[in-house]
Image 1 (spheres, rainbow, N blue to C red):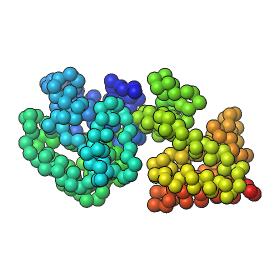
Image 2: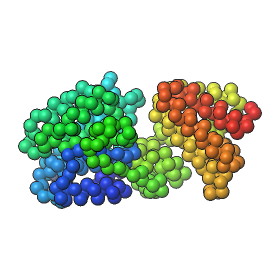
Image 3: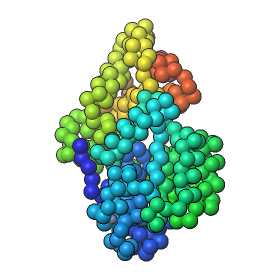
Image 4: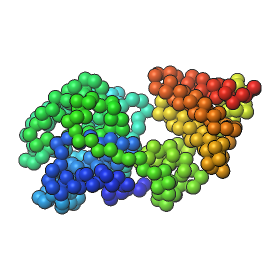
Length: 356
Ligand SMILES: [Zn+2]
């Protein structure tokens, strides 16, 4: 597993903003780090916590990375560094352990659970109570709310009061993949820093060089990663490859098989699939389609990884694209994955004129 010494892999704007503020001893009381999963928001939040709690007195020498404080921040055991992250209600301790051990092994790791994980209001309240106490070691206190976009309305209201008037010495670091899900009133209290998606070519090259991923897989993984290194690593497992292969096979056969056979195949593959894995399959099909469209438009010569879509012109491609994005958005409103996938493929076949 590749770990990085710098939290700022290909994030020069974030690095400049934070090291500049650090050098002048002007770190903000509240940051909101926004960007794709696995882009480095967690290691950056930990870097900020080390900066604020490090034993080194001078700005530019912080964080030293070797003092007792820095080490305890990294181990998430510092008594003045409070960390919240999304877990499932039913599995508090197991999820906490799974999340932290993955992050300790690789700060860029993307941790997903089989069902929805949140920052529940009782945990946010507990955090605020801790923040109102005096600092254990006499210095600053740091509150990291990782995945703050997974807070519901009540949790956000509870947090808002504290962010509006932070207790003395308290610094907040919030992270989010989707900043729109955070109250404007909270956002306006934070300095927002955006992590740009890293270019697919860079991620693909690194997967080949450091993780031994074959070239035939690395481009697809990089495209699916959304520009986050950690998300790409999570997709480079055998399990994820099996899921991708199934999605590719389905795409390939979708336009040749009988409709009834196709629906049966979809039923087998998607009955037990969660939302995340179904969205991932939609990403695979979007990638295949984009490659086929590029070929139809004369931009690319080689077809996509599964050549079944038979996109002959850009107009057909565009219609298919709309069908795919529609299927993807339907999934978000609580439709069974199997139904969304079936409806999408039937619509695609109708558009492509399959008579089987
Ligand atoms: Zn230190």
